[in-house]
Image (tube, rainbow, N blue to C red; front, side, top):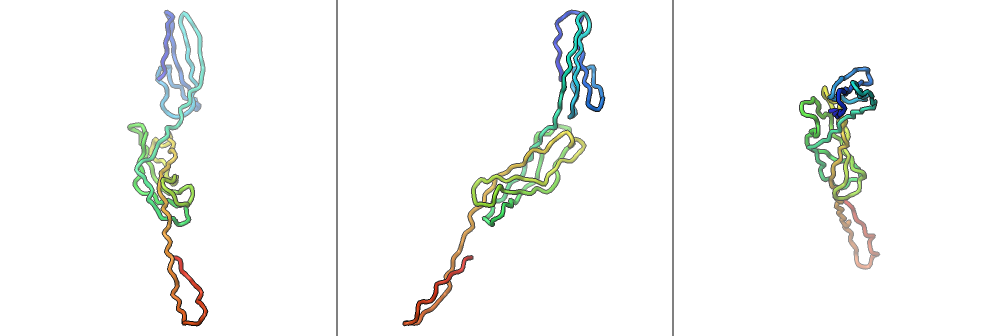
Length: 173
């Protein structure tokens, strides 16, 4: 809300907000609530006169997403992250109709093994009558990629006394 302090006697101060679409709000001390750009004009009338003009920009409110996690995985050379849970919004204005929809898709920054690796989530969007007043913030989670165990098995070979040694061989699983 806008606040005006006027000390001269017999003076009035009014504030008018004009939206970029030409809509006029006021004269009032209550600022508009919807996102957009507004020209603000303050007028002093009575024994003293004057005016001030400025711009008020109301930006989209950034919403966070909660309720998601990343499953740990064994190293497979890819950066794919499996996202679990049900996405829910945080930081919306009470009474607004806005929700999150879509299928969350997770990606680690790289496919290398590590603990607490950053995974970004895409595939989500905002829906609802008030969704235009909001922006979905970045969804960043952490998860683990554990080293892949390697099993080495020797290939069976035999040798008869007096013959050359057989070549040693193995299989990796």
